[in-house]
Amino acid sequence: MQFNELNLCDPILRAIEVLNFTTPTEIQQEAIPYLLETDRDFVGQAQTGTGKTAAFVVPLLERIKDQKIPTHALILTPTRELAYQVEKEINNFGRYLNLNTCLIYGGTPYDKQINLLRKTQPEIIVGTPGRIIDLIERGKLDFSNSEYLILDEADEMLKMGFIDDVQHIMECFSAARKTWMFSATMPDEIVNLINKNLNKPKFIKCKKKSLSNEDIEQSYYLVDRKYRFEALHRLILQNGSGPSIVFCRTRQDTKDIADKLLAKGIMADCLNGDLSQGQREYAMNKFKSGRTDVLVCTDVAARGIDVTGLEVVYNFGLPLDNESYVHRIGRTGRAGAKGLAQSIVTNNEMGLLRKIEKTINHRIKRSDVPKNTDLKSKIVSQKIEKISKIKESVVSKGNEFKVDSSFGIFLNEFDNCSKDDLQKIFFTLLFNKEFHDVDRFGDVDFSDKKRSDFSARKQRPGRGSSDNRRRSFSQRSHDRKDDSSKGRRPRSRRA
Image 1 (cartoon, rainbow, N blue to C red):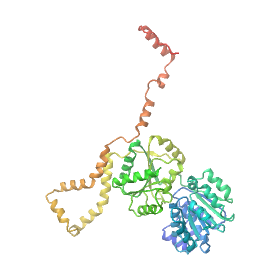
Image 2 (cartoon, rainbow, N blue to C red):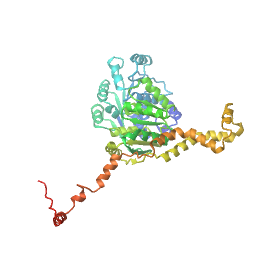
Image 3 (cartoon, one colour):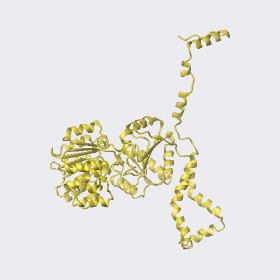
């Protein structure tokens, strides 16, 4: 099936063509035709990164394109970042339609949003539960005549404690509303919400892609807690400077790790709930524009991040629930692209790892933190790749290659140096700092010693071991007789 085979208007098809989309994803193939043709409620289950947003944005735009009805639809999302991402998709697919959208979320002045609502009279509102309820209670939003309610990432709203807010918002709509729900997982509380509020919904569950996306290469590194950051640093050096995300459990961790990476010359920034909306948008814009290579963030702050070409996701420790792991690694390996998901794990997190493996039905391979020699070779190869274009340009143009007049000072300084000397100077200048960081630890064993020592003790025979317990009664009797024959009293059992 192709997009041009769907019953879509020309303006939307033109927008899809501009976006270079041709073939719908599985959830889009299942959801779009159904939502275009029927008025029943709908529930779609598909993992992160499978195109759920377009699966509801496209049919919504097609349905309301000719109806200038204010507050015609509400799209509810768990976070500001995801709301921003959804609005962006609406603008992308609806660029040739005369429709207005308004973004409503916390952290920004009420007056600004209220004035925008009054001025634009938007057909579609995208918002987060808390601010939507605030404006309802202030009498600035009225959904009693709204036709569409769309819940995006419903399981995440449950996880963040918004389930009661969602229920309250649903009660502000008329019973005639059409409700579309999309979620990566279906916890019992979400099923109960569906049973209570939706009218005989159509269920679609995408099964073609397992929770362990085949496009994502997953691995874990078992390290001693004191070496966690050094292990992360080495993995980042090994993988290169492509865009990547580091996930942490706490806001403080995001700041600490971003600061440490910056100190090592890696362009990093943090994203967490302590930042103002302006700061969060600034951090995201830097990351998306390539001015930041590594974004360090918490699970909540990362909702809605959709960066083209995201190469690696690092887990600085594992999340406490399995679904969060699926959401984390789903930031990479999107739309058929290959991705890496690398988890830095300590001994006390191995139980979490096994539970995650059971959830995704996939064995995550164990790997070793890069050794010094391998890491240095990788660093040199990556740097050479970066300067190869300059080298090719200089060699091909020869004397025609233009350099600044100050190049003469450089020539005078190194006039008496041989080619071998210059190569050594150049090499030292390029790599000395990074190699110093690598050598600082030496080739230490990053693995968790407690785990390996415990395993060794389990294998070693000794007091109380199974080998001793297996000795027969006759053997113990023989030992006692032998003691007696040597003039020693046989040992008696203690009472």
